[in-house]
Image (tube, rainbow, N blue to C red; front, side, top):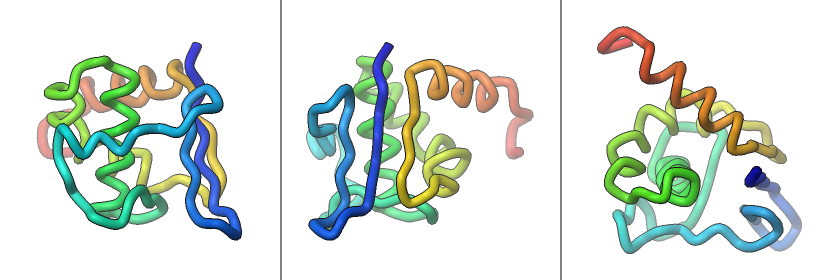
Length: 103
C-alpha cells in the first residue's frame, strides 16, 4: 500500500510517495508556480491534492475533477508534518462521494 508523507524542513517543503519525490503533475494542470503547500485553501494545496490523487488513482482527469473537494476536505486541514496512506485517501474519497451536493 502506498504511503504519502509531507514535511516542512529547514530546506523547504518535501512531499514523498514511498520514499520518492511526488511529481507536481503540472502536465495535468498548474494551479501555482510555487509548488506544494497545505494547511489552507489555495493554489499550492490544490496542486498537492491533484498530485496525490493523480498518483493514487492513476487517472489525471479524475484527479483534476476531485482536486478541489479533496483539497478542501483534507489538504487544507493537514498538520505541518503528515502521512496519508492509500487507504486514507480512499476513505476520504468515499466520504466525498457520499456527501450531499453542495455540502
